[in-house]
Amino acid sequence: QVQLIESGGGLVQAGGSLRLSCAASGRTVSSYVMGWFRQVPGMEREFVAGINWSGGTYYAESVKGRFTISRDNAKNTVYLQMNSLNAEDTAVYYCAAEDSSWASTIPSGRLDYDFWGQGTQVTVSS
Image 1 (cartoon, rainbow, N blue to C red):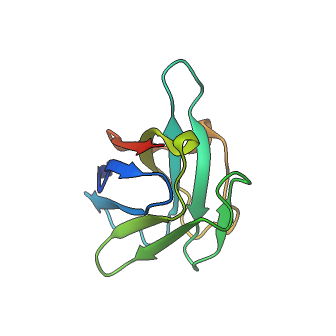
Image 2 (image 1 turned 120 degrees about the vertical axis):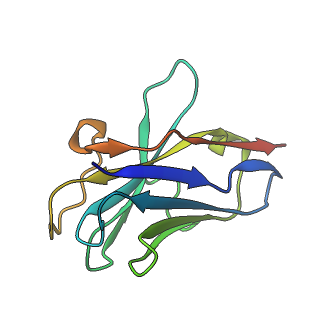
């Protein structure tokens, strides 16, 4: 089993930045695809960004150019740097891991991921 713990959420003004962290434990996730999703109450959980074992990345169109996903395999941690935040980015952000070692393809479907964190709230005030 993999446990994922997100941190770094909070309240920020529009135009500001936040960096989310996702610390994994239980297994080394360096070979896993890692993803970030977000969810607003009453809406489906949506894909934000993903990163594969070699550092390849994939972003939702809504965040491309503003968000950057990265990983530090030595720390078993994944990050999401979020810049130029706006009110539409307000959501609970979830970290996820796909148990498909050394896969290059980064899926954007929620059901493709096997492990999830509890989420961290990001609120952007306008």
